[in-house]
Length: 276
Ligand SMILES: C[S@@+](CC[C@H](N)C(=O)[O-])C[C@H]1O[C@@H](n2cnc3c(N)ncnc32)[C@H](O)[C@@H]1O
Image (cartoon, rainbow, N blue to C red; front, side, top):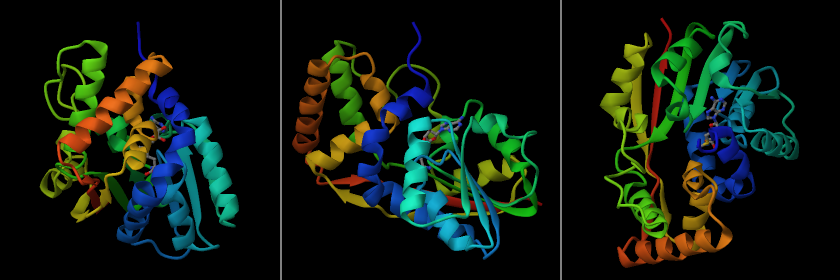
């Protein structure tokens, strides 16, 4: 039996996704755009755009003479992104429901900037996918990527997956961000400044640099559970009935409090580079 696809997981997250936006996706998206160094009039391709955190910030940064194409394959999130852009009065942005790994070859290589917030590590064959996506930039175009920094969400996800395993009667998970046995999650290949700059340069980008946005959110029950339901973490709940989900929620929140966690580490690593 196969699990839900990433698009299905994010579609089911849509009602909760924007609960996290003011505290995490929003500030990270703003910082991503600020560090991408956009100019008025730039053409931007924002991939894995969710409800538009970085896409909307980019649309503001490039102004009415610029343009943003925002792409995500989760229809429900794209609908919300469109509504968010309408509410913000932004007209220089187009939304597209699409799998970003299939864009190279179908779009012209004309973009000044490619942005991606918390998305590259979901792409199958992350290296090949991003290498191909870089071909959509004009020569000298810029890439800006946001991912989790180092220990970000480590204690949080440890508590979550430990509780999911306990409720399901599975053995405790082996380690951080590893809900099951298997190869290391791609996140761990690009979670420090040195690693992500080396990674971008291995894909052919040049002049890479990275910085950390410190993002600590007070641990409340409301935020903690929204962060689960409004992110890919909710995938581990698929197939559970409401009673089982409630048991995971209660046990997870108890663990966080019991572990003495007072803030959730959402530190974000932002890397920029350009094509030669
Ligand atoms: C954690 S969310 C981040 C959304 C947004 N960039 C933000 O920072 O708020 C990851 C997004 O990547 C999208 N995604 C993952 N793989 C994708 C693919 N192959 N094509 C299009 N979208 C994808 C998911 O649907 C989800 O909306």
